[in-house]
Image 1: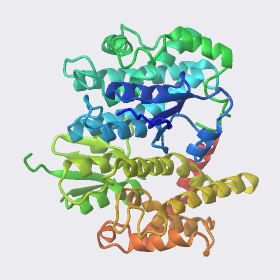
Image 2: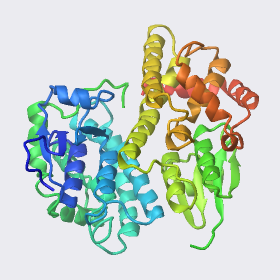
Image 3: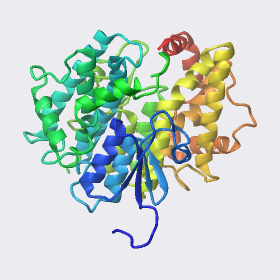
Amino acid sequence: MSSTKEEAPAVRVLGLWASPFVIRVLIALRLKGVEHEVLEEVVGKKSELLLRSNPVHKKIPVLLHHGKPISESLIIVQYIDEVWSSNAPAVLPADPYVRAVERFWAQYIDDKFPRGIRILKGTVDGNKDEIVEQLSTALQLLEEAFLKLSNGKHYFGGDNIGYLDIALGSHVGWVRAVEKIAGVQLLDAAKVPHLVAWADRFCAHPAVMDVLPDADRFVEYSVKYGSFFPTRSSTTK
Amino acid sequence: MSPSTVKLIGAFGSPFAHRAEVALRLKGVPYELLLEELMISKSDLLLKHNPIHKKVPVLLHGARTICESLVIIEYIDEAFDGPAIMPTDPYERAMARFWAHFMDNKCAKPFMLSVWSEGEVQKGFLKEVKENLALLQAQLEGKRFFAGESIGYLDIVLCSLAHWLTVIEEATGVKLVADDEFPDLRRWAKEYTSNEIVKQCLPDRDQLLAFYTAHLERYKMIAKAMLQQ
């Protein structure tokens, strides 16, 4: 699989370690055992390669596979699963209905968490109490989804982490960080005990542990850079 | 798997419900259409099956419930036998999903707001609409459909550009796109709306125009709320 010639690695990821969206891609690649190179962007300054590779959104992550760019984290994760389909484990579940359920929740997660986290970090104006309530409700729903999907096993994906584990788990770093920053409780063992246990297992998983740092590192990042996400006006989501 | 009843909760005039219907018809899946009257109230059935978003379409397949039009299309493609809706190549699939996501996340708001805003704000949204359309047109690459020779995922996803766009222009009196702009998109729109399968579930243009005209104030309110967010 590895080349003997001098050439750019077949699989490269343009990213930033603190981005949950980048973390998703790295987890998927590690899970599949795919050799890859990570090109770390400089915070606040987008590289020429990034701008060329994702001219539409100019955002990380971008996966470059033999130079061809793929953008949007969940799309990249599905791409990885499809290209390296012969590498176990499967990321997407085999059953079309379970897939649909996981895709539904992954979309829901990205509707709620990125914005909610930005508000709790103070990057964007918003009603923090309202957000805590919204995210708590979301986590409650996800706790129920976990019980249904895991079927008594360790992960949303069952015996191993899968698409939905990655979609939600990638946000755990920042969720725990904003709990400290805003002084709130989201992953509350009294309210969502199964998710709390799942989060610990997820973070300790071999494909995850080296790319999802502790909450403190995210807190440090937030202090250092003011915000991970560029400051947005209150008129954009 | 033993055959189970397929029902689709939709609503007249919804491009999202249309997406689901086209997918079912392309796949050759018989279904019962349950129409909501969203302007009046949401049915118990809808609220029961889509408690989180309370929106159409909702696909009911036996005991299964699937919400969100893009999720529904992929489910239909994977759960039933029939002609493929998604491309087979992983890179093509990723591209199709990317542009679907672009349509739903980046295009909807500027389209709505370019019609309902005024002055400099409107100019800004109009510019964005044209940039978005240029990007989408580029994906056609001179092909008959976004998917190639026959209709596929991205064609279905972009249906509102093919049919709803000019209706909204007429209902609101705001011309978003000049007659000579985006010729490839216009050609594609004609191909899409004249497709035999699409025609079976495309809302009648006059009825659609009457619908939007009757509910103009409502859409204006939705747009103004969007602008304030």
